[in-house]
Image (cartoon, rainbow, N blue to C red; front, side, top):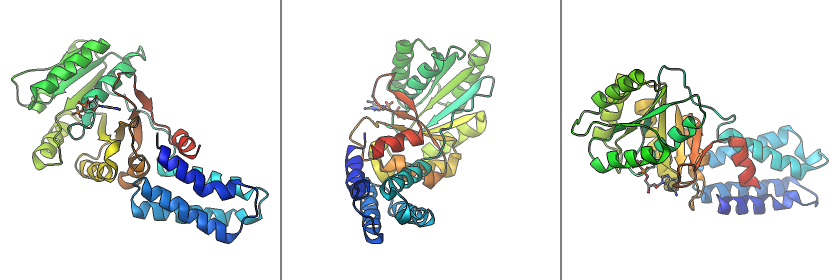
Length: 295
Ligand code: GDP
């Protein structure tokens, strides 16, 4: 995961990790390299620039050059800032409702259906949760089939209403079904399109208003880099969502989305998808991710 970024940051911090004398000049050089590594990872220019500015300020504030182990302190400052940039503390799901309703949003192909299954499976394994999946993609019968396949695979019931083309009505009926049948979590999988368009945004916004979910999650393919961040902004402007799900982190993704998304929409990344299998889901811990990136 993020091998390229890790290598570049490792190289950038190499001088400081060594035992040679550290001067203002090589701190400045290092920060330049750190910035270049972030830009290469597809981190937005402004974010990368502010990042290195904050690291520099902290380094000056903590008198890095006069400490016993300036290199290690610099690495720690970079790690702390990276953690902060990705969200600080991990944030869980709000599962306070009876049932708790989780609305999935995102573009087609982002991994919504797969993640809906993963999340249902994750919650089911918590024993106290009895999730229901609801299929609200009224445009693609294959999407409904796909959710049923996923549901069968993990042993979770799927509510669908083929022929009904009103996603608001289906989601409401799904919640009513959950109430009547003892499901304490409802995960609503919605229709996405290949690109942001008004029809999709109006539809998801209508569902959101009608059901008032405890959690609205935005699912995004991390492989799409800066586009992921732009799409997140558009969805957040409409939905004011609660958290981000970053999928396909197992692929050859450069890391820009993971690093930038929080500071653009100011919403936490809650989970990551790391494969096609139902078990490939992880809670997102910014500090662990920073450790991983900085090796
Ligand atoms: P949706 O259109 O948003 O519902 O997206 P899907 O759930 O159908 O996912 C689109 C494709 O991405 C499928 O082939 C999934 O198997 C794949 N996929 C979803 N999540 C992940 C992931 O975390 N890693 C990988 N490698 N593939 C994923």
